[in-house]
Length: 422
Image 1: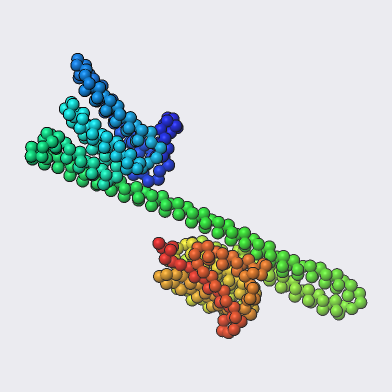
Image 2: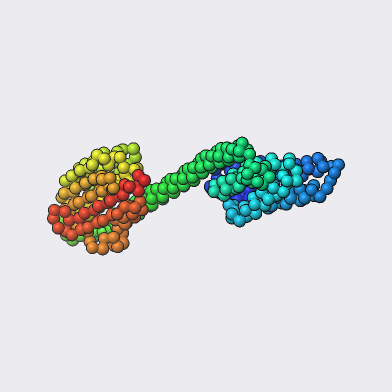
């Protein structure tokens, strides 16, 4: 049934596609069609009723009345039932309502029982026109009705009738404005809720993509670490073992020394492997407060590496949105891992502060510093990953390294709070 209506009456598709409706589509479309059917029945009943009343004396008046009502019905069907766009321009409304008022004046002049048709035009103006044209149409109708009742002589206007019409106008217009603005507010609220829901889904998709991207980068980092360090070390050990085998026959002391070197390399490889495994086992933020997680990470890195890791975290950091907390946690992990593996630092400081505008995470170390082209060098996925993650939620990541004391390298992530809270 619904698809049949969509093929026969294009405005059904328009209503289904229009997000600015005062009611849900499943209610609004039947509501509109109910009033379409009522209007059509009023016109048809008026034609048939007039012919039936005058069946014993059919004359030119019946023909004029039937013609006018058929023309009004035709214009109504063309403009409001079979329309393919909405809203209509005002000039098309003017054709129907202007012609309807003129037709009503003629009809009520020929047959007094058509006087009540004016209430249908008033109701249609409230249902089909914007506020200002609707009010103007209703006021015009009531003025014409008052003048018509007085024989078109102002001095003959009945004060009681004029007061009654004025009361009808004020009450109907007031009720119309109340309903109109209530429905408009409801519609705007519905659109806002839909936009917020769409934005929430988009944020969830972006966050899921960021998490998946982080997993891929982590896999790349692990593969790079295993290849660059363990792979090269094992290849070197293979060559040195062959050399040691040959040396045992001619120079056992040099072979023993070579074995000692290989033992050292094996211990270093095992330490690197343990660091990689520890990185894999490092828990995510999960349900832990960010402040606690950062403090625990600083203690863990200090105990594992022997560096002095100072940690100063603003307690207010636990109140920031989860997406910001997750981002800062990932930045802190990556930055501390880089310091531990590459900086040869003695002292590290982790500082997090929160202001009404933003949240800042700073990691300083007194190590050897970073190369000038660290972000452009192949293999530095961690630095690029930090920057992409921070900039992906509107933040700024700055990395400076001048090799000077007390701090040789500074990593700072600044994430805005205003946009998140707004």
